[in-house]
Amino acid sequence: MKRLAVLTASVFGLALLAAPVSAQQYPSRNVTIICPYPAGGPTDQTARVVANFLSKKFGQNFIVENVTGGGTNIATNRVTKATPDGYTLLLHNLQISANPTLYKSLTFDTVKDLTAVMMVNNNPLVMVGRKDLPPNTLAELLTYMKTNRLKAALPGYGATGHLATTLVAQEAKVEIDQIPYRGAAPAITDLLGGHVDLFFATPQSIVPQVKAGQLKAFGVTSAAKLDKLPDVGSFVKALGPKLEILYWQALYAPAGTPDAVINTLNAAMQEAVSDPTIIKTWDDEGFFIYPKEQRTVAFANEQLKSEIARWGQVIRDNNIHVDQ
Image (tube, rainbow, N blue to C red):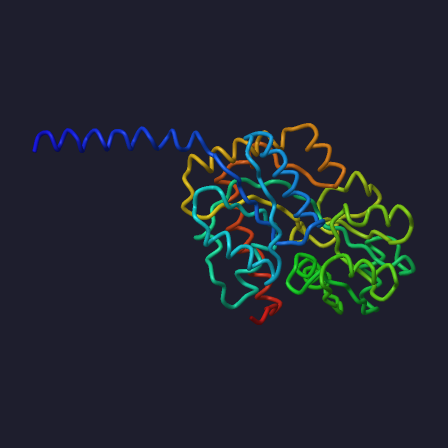
């Protein structure tokens, strides 16, 4: 019995020693970063910047896989059901916080089945309009909408642009006809063609058209003005703090992923967002990097909970839902 006890203790000791060694060796093979959007969009672009940096950092391939459909829920479901070992990750955005309320039944619990790695970047939205729309400033637009019912394109029903447009109508106390499209590209095409009046876009997707005079930019969903659009007003100052909307992006892993792996990824991401090349790339695209105190795992997890509560209230107040 004594010999068995010693043997058992030795095996247990070896197991304890093996755990940190295993964590130190992460990653030892390819890692997949799931992106719930098609290639070429802002979230896909961010995922590829992250994957490229992490591949060089660790000497292992970080591969972006685009898993689309289901309002991004197919991709999220896949990650929540993946083995929690750090080899399947999710790069998502604000949409993940709206879906728990938008959809009546999901095959996963967003908060319980995922753990955050880090908030990656964010940018405000910009409301743009067709070039021949009579107003020229945000104040003029808000006044104009009191007596003119405009048509706003949506990048999708329940998407960030839909929620932002709904909040503008709610806080400005105006009626806006909202027309859903299959993504931002066709919505912008119809806006350029004059078939709709307004659209909420990410800065990088519309700044060239605004500067070329093909679109009018009316307002940004941040308190501060954008350097690239310095003459464009702020919805926050015009309509209040509810209109502060950041299109944020974050990296997640399946719940249960070892803390050592999450911390390894977080430390690597801290390096990524401090890299001069990445900083310039995202600055050119209109993205802001989170301040250091907001790059922790704890902050990212709390931010997800907070955003789910915030958008859940907006969705319920305006009776927005997606039938499954």
